[in-house]
Image (cartoon, rainbow, N blue to C red; front, side, top):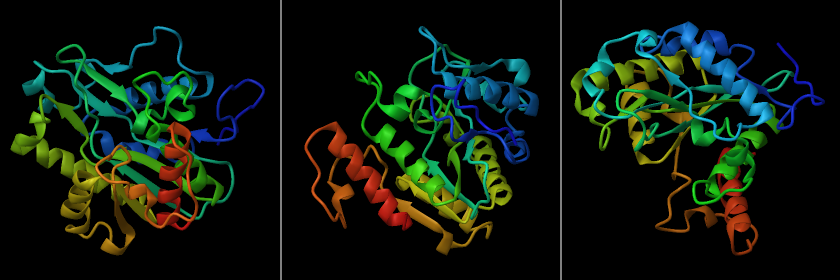
Length: 270
């Protein structure tokens, strides 16, 4: 396992990005993309994770030659989104892995037929993790989720970051309306959970929870007692993040970030 060198890395030099067992765990995604392609993208994202995104940076992508299936051919009239599952860890003994599971790799813009690759709530971007020059794109829940990841690390858990639905293509995700597309995504999710063996899965949002329960729990890949269904961090209809709060939070982005971080940490017992 490679140990980060804080003298040459500007951001989060104390954590490991897609090292350790990641090369073995990512095999669950090989029904979609080749292992070599997944590794190539991971290597590039690891560099950016530590050094930051260059000005004018474009999202990495998979070429058609790197697709391991013809499943996506039916959706090449639309931008196609995929989030690379990531393992965040430290070079120390671990109490196990906590899986944080978002809903899907939403993609509204991009070139038709091109699979652009992101990460769970922009984990590869220093702007999303640390709220640097946020502008309109970066909301307080992005750094709040990174705060939760760090809290897990501090409690000696490693963290697996992933999506319940693996690919997004077309309005409302047309891929899921295709019987084969839905089946393949479910198979990959079940295999991923079986390989990662999380001590706890946190499903963020109702869609993620329904997928986890309907696939992994139903197939007995994981017990229901190890799945925690929590609100999506971007949810705004109620102030759910104040449930069980033990202190007041200031108005504004910093207060909202702290309130959401504390909510998830309370739920996880961190």
